[in-house]
Amino acid sequence: MTRTPTATDRLRHAIVTGRLGPGERLVELQLTEMLDAGRGAVRSALVELEKEGLVIREANRGATVRRVSLAEAIQITEARSALESLVAARAATRATPADRRELQDLVTEMGRTVEAADHARYSELNSLLHAALRRISDHTVANELVANLRDRAAGHEYRLALMPGRPEHSLQQHRAIVAAVTAADPEAAATAMAEHLASVIDVLRHWAQIEQKAV
Amino acid sequence: MTRTPTATDRLRHAIVTGRLGPGERLVELQLTEMLDAGRGAVRSALVELEKEGLVIREANRGATVRRVSLAEAIQITEARSALESLVAARAATRATPADRRELQDLVTEMGRTVEAADHARYSELNSLLHAALRRISDHTVANELVANLRDRAAGHEYRLALMPGRPEHSLQQHRAIVAAVTAADPEAAATAMAEHLASVIDVLRHWAQIEQKAV
DNA sequence: CCGCTCGTGATTGTGAACAGTATTGTCGAT
DNA sequence: ATCGACAATACTGTTCACAATCACGAGCGG
Picture: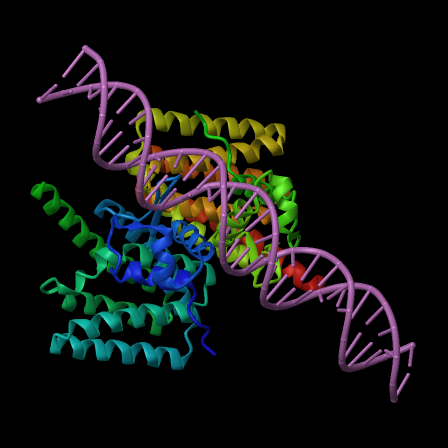
């Protein structure tokens, strides 16, 4: 029984997938037909998504899709790094033999997709791997926060996989994470995860410099 | 011009200060007079506070103040630990001389209150110190998350200061944090903060065991 | 030609009424 | 006395209309 997605879910999806671009105006009346919901539900959705950091609302001036700057994307990833390190450490202490198998299977398939240069599938496996770690960690609070942070930075992360040489780099880091988790070594898992996200942050910083030059 | 607190702010305050206890029913019509706001604003406040984890809403059954178990309080503090370590590290790299002075003044006053056994003032200084670190860190994303986590666990933290011997212990840890920050040593600041919150978690775990025996 | 004021349209904010749903209390049968 | 059906109640969820506010542009004076 997978309950039907709420208006909030649909609106969130439209934003993180980019169907509604940054800065786009969100007029309540328009959203009622787009989401097929009453104005009350739409208002509620806007309030929720504002709390999630996906939307900005100004009094009497309406809501817009939030523009997240590169500087903010870096902060988001830093926070994610702190939390996902915790998640990885916990996963290392809690993973069952079946879990370890699953993680290893995921990285081996990631290796194949890197060879095949299948970016879309790689990105998907990437998500699956992180999701698996979150499930194994069973840390409700951290998982909720991480999920939110991921959504917020979605607009900036999608181009990561397209960077030349990046998948190989990323693959190695994921191997290190999974190795630490399967070895039940929480400290190593945390540092491996931190290093992985630190390298993501490096890329973002690099882009930030380019962007500044362009202006 | 400090803008007047919204209905959401007032309701949040009532919950974190314990004026509305865990499990208490939140009837919209009652809240309209308690907060002096329309039902729309009350609804919006409930949605927001649900996102903040302070309130639970069930369809057609109304909202209640969320009960946070000790196990959850531990998770919350773990997540806070991860994020506040990041905050402390950033504060260490960004603190100005004036900031360092302010931090040192705070710990010396904390020392005096410990001698005087002034629990209330100590708790207040504790908050001020953490708040100062957050301000100095200038890490919007992490600060927002930490503020939220702090509110969530508020119901469990208030009794920490009453534990015998705890203030002395806590004071030492805060000294270590401030020392690392003033020394501009981010790694040391992060680990000092992590140790501080680890000891808080230890106390919570200790309580959890007692609680289990009591059942 | 520039700046200011004032109207107008669009959109949010709010209050009231109504409908839908869970809960509680009551009555009757066994 | 206990249980089940059923009515009464209390609340939430939704809709509607209207008031409040802001952005934009026209008109006017300098």
